Length: 335
Image (cartoon, rainbow, N blue to C red):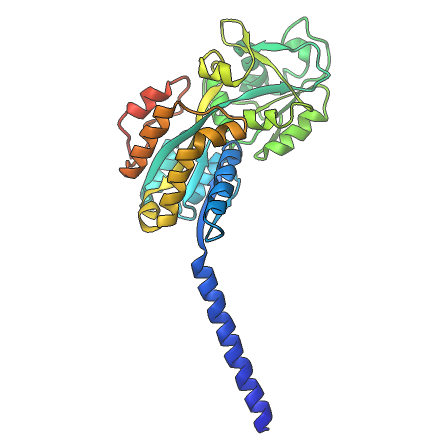
C-alpha cells in the first residue's frame, strides 16, 4: 500500500510539473488574433508569416476569414486584435464598437482592383460598361436578367450564371456602391460565398459564368479565369498595377484596410511590433500577393498615425468610391 501511495504521489507531482511547464510555454508564445475580409487575407497572412518567422516562434499570429462584416462583429466584441476590411467601417459597426468601448486605428495597407471575371471560353464579353454591370446586378434584375443577350444584344442567347461575395463581404458592399449606386443593393439570385476560392471554382467550372472578387484571387488563377475590361466612361480598362496607380481602372479600384484595437496595441508590445512590421513591409508584401502598394508617403503617414494612436475612421461610417489616398489620410478621423 505504501508503494502504491508513493507512485500515486509521484504521478501527481509529475502532472503538476507538466502543467506548470505547459503554462510557461503558453505564456512564452504571445498570441495575435486577426479575422475579417477574404480580400485582405492574402496580404495579412503574408505579413503574419514573415513576422512569426522574424520572431522565431515567440509570437503566434492567427488569421481567419469571416468576411469584412463578420470580422467587425468579432472585433467590436473585443474578440480580435485586428480586423481585416475591404471597405471602411460602417456606422452600425462604429456604434457597436463604441458600445463595447472598443477604440480602433484605421490603416490602409494596399490597393485592390476589384475584378470582374468570366470563364476562359467566353469569347463575347471582353468588356462591359458600368451601366451593363448595373443591368446585371441591380435588385430589379432578379429573375429577369437571366441570359447574356439581355445585357447586350450582340451577346449570345445563353444562360447568365452569376457568382459573387456574400452579404457579409466588404467587396459586396463596395461593388454595389460603385456599380448600382447603393451599398448592399443587389439581386439575390446568384451563387454567393464569403470564401473567394469557392467563387474561383464556381466561375472556372461554368462556361456561362460571370463573377467578381479581389484581384489577388484572379491573379493566382489566371489559367482558370478571364478578366473583363471595365468601361467607366473612357473606354474599357483591364485591372493591373498600372491602371490602378494611374486611376484609369475606375470605379473598381479601392484601398483595403486593417483596423487595430487601440487599447490592445498599447497593452501588447507584440501587437504594436506586428503592426509596425506590417506597414514597413507592406509595399513588398502587396506586390508579393498581387495587390498594388500605396505610395511610400502613405505608409509613412499611416505609421505615424498608428504610433500616435490616432483613433477613429476618416469615412464617418459611410461607403465611399473614388477618393484619393492622400486626401483620405489628411482627413480628421471620427470615432
